[in-house]
Image 1 (cartoon, rainbow, N blue to C red):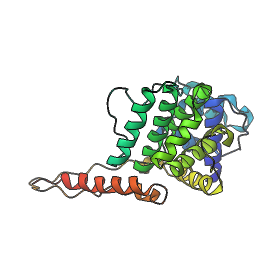
Image 2 (image 1 turned 45 degrees about the horizontal axis):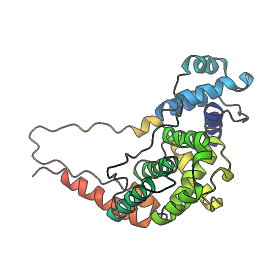
Image 3 (image 1 turned 30 degrees about the vertical axis):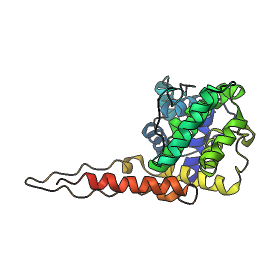
Image 4 (image 1 turned 135 degrees about the vertical axis):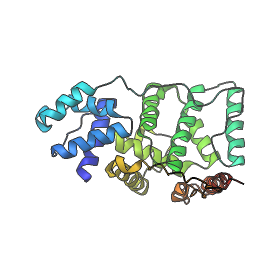
Length: 272
């Protein structure tokens, strides 16, 4: 199924950013699975656009027609920042990390050479890190981050970004996020001057995360609803989300705090 992953990422880069990528021939079954995967992850518009822009001879006629009718106006927008000046924001589970982030925002807003674009970029990086910790890669959020970088890269102070990343201790996770952008949308490592370690080990981790997300069946990701039993007095303890622990060695403080918070949330669901 690696061919499905390769075609999926290539079509994303073609549809979202107009990259020049070659598409490999697949069976119609795999093409249908690819479209289903794109729909499940909310990037159907990008993939359909990529199919239409590709060599029609490599794609079954039915799939090409389906993609031609399925192109929507879903495009990654260089949208607003993920913070609101003047009030505290909470993007981490760890109290001290939130304090550091809010101090960064406060100091930057009140500095002589304020760069809102740089703060926005930082927040988008953190949002993608949170997605990885909680539920895995969010391809739409990745596309939004990539679009913002392409649109406002000349207005972003990468020296500040690098200093903030170091202060927050999120360098390793940022490496993974940037490597995901490289794999998904054919970005170049040089487009991330604030990251100096986008090497093989982070690229392998990013590829592993992405291939598992793309190659796993979207239908299996939908959990069946639990049937309620009449007369049940106590709700069963829901299993805490252990996803953050997969990234413990990359961000130990936040992953530990998030796991503890998940346990507390599970316990709070018990009826007394």
